[in-house]
Each structure stands twice: as C-alpha cells, then as structure tokens.
Length: 163
Image 1 (cartoon, rainbow, N blue to C red):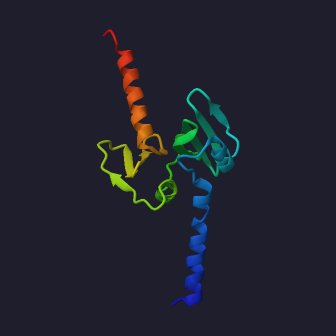
Image 2 (image 1 turned 30 degrees about the vertical axis):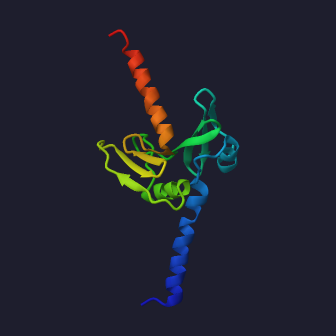
Image 3 (image 1 turned 90 degrees about the vertical axis):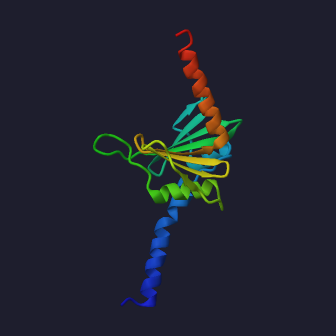
C-alpha cells in the first residue's frame, strides 16, 4: 500500500508532465500575425498570397491562416515521421488541449463523419478536424470553412466549364 505522500507525489508528477502541452501547443483563433509570432517565433515560411505563416515549435509545424488580419484556421502537423516518412498523428490529449484552448469553457461535440478517414468536432462557431490519412489536425471557425468550401466549389466548376 502506498502512503498519502507517495500518492500525492505521483499525482503532482503526472500533472507536471501535462502542463507543458497547453503552454507550448496553444494557438488561439482570432490572434493577429504578431501574436502568432510571439507564440511560435518567427515564421519558417510565409505565403503572402494565401495569407499563411508556417512556424516550427516543440516538434510541430504550425500553419496559421489569416482572414482580415486575424487567425481563422490553425493546422498542426508533427515533424516526427514514421518509417514510411508520414508525419505521426497528434495524440488524443494533444488534440483535446488544443480544442480547449480555442473554445475555453465550451464543450466540444464529436460529430459522426461520413468519411472513415476524418474525425470532426464542433463547439459553437468552432470546428476541429483530424485527418487520419494525412495526419493534420486543424481548428477553424465555421465561417472560414464555409468560405473555403465555397471557393473550392467555384474552382471545380470553373475547371469543368465547357465540358
């Protein structure tokens, strides 16, 4: 039987193990490019046309996408790769920490997906998507996603115009 002090020491050690996750991985939807630089450091790549910045921090590649100078989508990919060169997926704990940071106090609901290769969660105006094939975890506003899909639809229609 373990003593109360041993029990509490183990609980404290477990708590301390998880504390770095929120502080390192937390991006916030709605932050400015400057705030993202403060959070992640100078970008390793900037795509001005697509209004994206890419950062490297804590073993992750973080892509921040901006609309009207506010972060509307954040994507996370682990730098670590498997034997086939595919990035490893974020853990359930990492995803939960990121979702909580972007919708504090909200309860994320996992939505049933018609796609076997993706998982979806929603919380108010926020949506999170975990792609199992190309292990990217992203969080965005529903408005951003609606705009993204509308643009994709127009691109696809334009490609087939005249068929």
